[in-house]
Amino acid sequence: MWRIFLGFTGTGALIALLVFANLPGYANPRIDTVRSVEPDGKVSESFFFRSPEDGIAVTHSGRLPLGIAPPGVVALSDPAIDKGFALILNMHDANARIVGFAVELEVHPEGDMFAQDLRWETEWVLVIPGRGMLILHQQEHSGELGPKVINSIRETRSDWIGDWTVQTTVGPLANGRGVIVGGTEEFEGASGSFIEIDHLTRYTVDGVMWGDFELRVAMEPRK
Amino acid sequence: MRSICRKFLPVIVMLTATATVFATHPASATESFFIGLPTDGIAMTHGGEVALAAGPPGIALLQETKIRNGFALLAKVRDVNDVVIGFASELETFPTDSDMLSESVIWDTSWTVMIPGRGSIYLLEQEQSGELGAKVIIPVQKTGEAWHGDWTVTTTVGPRPDGYGTIVGGSGEFAGASGKFLEIVTLTGFEPAGIMVGRVELRLTFDQAQ
Image 1: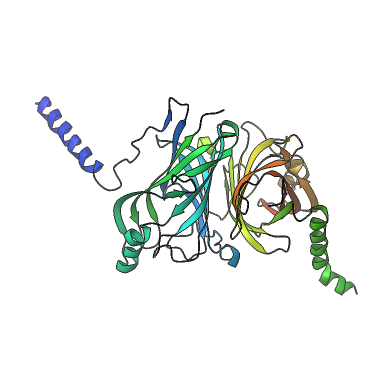
Image 2: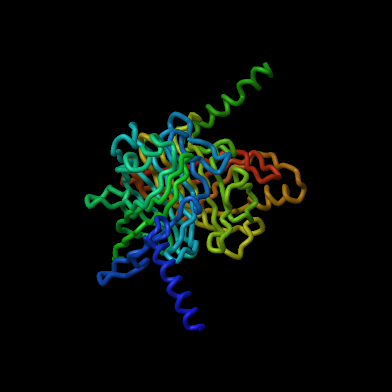
């Protein structure tokens, strides 16, 4: 009798796992090795964050379809900085352990980034205590964010729910990757490239983004 | 006459400061950026054990074990004419098992300065707590009364052998930039709630005209 019970329980658990694994937001997009050393000495490592859980503070002019948080954070409303965007957040390793914190700073171009495919400059600084600081520079583009997500929210006035993974990095390297600028301690003199990969599962009417985000860094061998 | 002097004193002080900046730094190779305390602060967080107030109230603290010694600041950036021209982040990690107030502790700091229309600049430095604890914070904590004064200190002590921080690079107008910089803090007040009053200057000296 207990074997039948165990059999049914086990089968039920497997079915539940399969169902959840295929639901938007439950599938784990982190399928790649997190830190690996290639035969040529190149080191690949990924850092992750989740939205909105890992967000500490986010600000911009107030004109982006994204909330400014927490309440009381100053908006970038001065004319000289009203195209700016700034985010402070926690950083995870692939095992969902907090290993550091970071800032993302952006300056957006003129124009409607949700009506056109616009490019802008983004700076990342990661602080990984015990390892050092890592500075990254990239160009990102709005791509399909407008047509696929934001415009539907504006039209329907309801949340967007889906499962969309996109590489936002488009430069400045000729191969479409961002660059490692340098760092301290373990990252002192680091060089190489990286990409930012965004996995969106929900975007609410009041501007809260849900999803997993990855900075996939490829460091060149030390000379 | 006295009232006229009082009225124009801030202007005179500002012009004097401006003149000082230009007099000591040839325009082609150096530039200073300023942050008013606390007026230009956007958001600030840390592990909760720093003597400064995190803000705005309710902001998440860096309380996870791994990041408890961290510090993050977002702030507006002004030019020498006191005009907002950009924004910046300052990230720090303090050494473990050290008391920044009773000891002179050295730690790593990263600045990223974003100047829309011009580009971004990345700066790395080592800072030192020096006399901040003994001179300002500890007396305030003991008495519960605000400190008022006029104390200017260069917090940068490295990593360059000459005690300067390093301009790591940049984008836009600052692409390929190199050189050195100092962080100079002028404190005029410190409130028991952990609020600093004063100004931060990032004084950059580029290796070549940008």
